[in-house]
Length: 447
Image 1 (cartoon, rainbow, N blue to C red):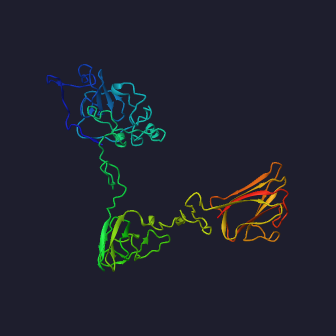
Image 2 (image 1 turned 90 degrees about the vertical axis):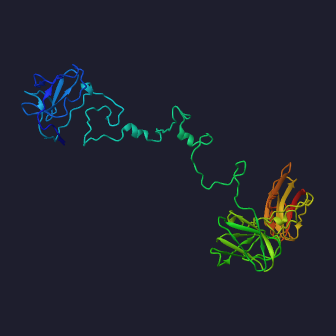
């Protein structure tokens, strides 16, 4: 480091302009008689008769000189003058700890970053640089002790004391925030979002082999209704010149088949996925279509009529062979099930509930004797006791007060592919035909 001083000795003068010889016995006077500011006496280096380099500082009561080589308090010898010529200063020794302003006692703590928690002996130099953060700042950057940030308004303005950052992230505050909504939905006059921005339906008039083309940009599916029993061919294209077949499905089909040409059915509704920009409709006979462009994906329409339930039986006649179908009768009198009851004879005899395929929905047995009896159910149109094997065998407990057994499958029923028969016997074996001592009461329902 180079410190430029004067190129010639400096002559100090008093306030009247008279030369003043500055020596160790006659140092420069303090500012205002001892009220100095503590700044250097000159902006150049000083020297004396020994040639030592030093500077002087006024602490308000006296002038203290510091040797630049030893960094210690120095007592000048002889005349004090400004050091001549340019002086090269290098290899400064380590500085002593600061003692504060005007030699005041050094502080023991500070909120300044880098104070080293009051370690005043830790000086900032190249080996110990000023840290960019202290331990308090680092510990604050945790989820347990977060640092909060606020942007407040002008203390004299309308938003004085208002945390604008918080308000910008809260709905309904009344503050106007510059936020742009991407792809906002259409809204009605009351501000409510409109579920679909699809246009209203359009009517296409098709002449004889005179196709009509529509631009489907921005939509995912197109649905149309045929107004007459005329087959329509649907094709698609990206350039509007070269068209290929498009495949859709009729919405009302239970097991619809994809097709590029619709059936000649009036009022039939078809849906096609949009795979190209343009879609063209043509017919060999003059007709018209009601067309709906929609953003609903085509998958929402596929197999719309195939719900896994035969809904054609609602209000119709129940069919026992259609396992799992919804079979609701038309009135309470024709509820789809047939009910029956009998008193099982003492001499065992099989009862035919239904001599063809059907469903058993419920069966209950009341046992009036003290010993158990057994309900045997057969998938057959006729039973030979001791020969025909039942498919199910249920124990009905007995007792002095009697016992009961209940079988209820009213949700889906038990399906019998051949027929429904049963018998009540006094023994457990499948082919048993032991007579009862007291008659049993049986109730059942079936289709």
